[in-house]
Length: 117
Length: 107
Image (cartoon, rainbow over all chains, first blue to last red; front, top):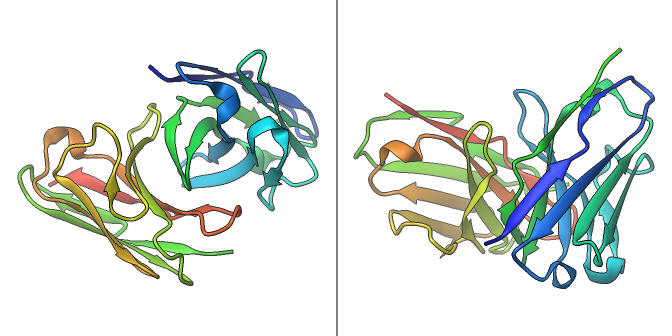
């Protein structure tokens, strides 16, 4: 059974940094593209970042480009999101998601990031 | 950026009724549309991919259709567990986007 478990969320001050992790199990992690998607309070879903297999290609949403860095460690079956220069508008639940074709077939339950002084 | 507009924002229906949800794209996305069900505090669940293909384990009462710019998700007969928020998503390019969601609530 596929499991994606996010961790690393919490309260951080504006301008601060945080690293999220997503631990994967139940599938061959290295064979799949992985994404981060977020949901702001009372908001919809927003694409954050994607990384293809072997980290060959990386993509970012416009609102996080230059501040966030996605990476993966296939030996640990783990996806990461390094977030810096955080803003209040980055407050959201962050989900990791396993890509299947042009959609996501599995998601984690999310980790909450709150940016506030 | 491709904008997805979902309508209605809220659908108030009773169990057993038919639900029809709409998703309109600002430009053609071929059939690269997926639909997800999301309940608060849970992981979103893939229902439909490539506009009309049911994901593994999804009941037959869920169906998707459309191509180009207009898409629909139909729930033929609402079950109590179907009351949730539904999102469409496109990935014509790597800059994927989601619709704003339709909340299906109990009338």
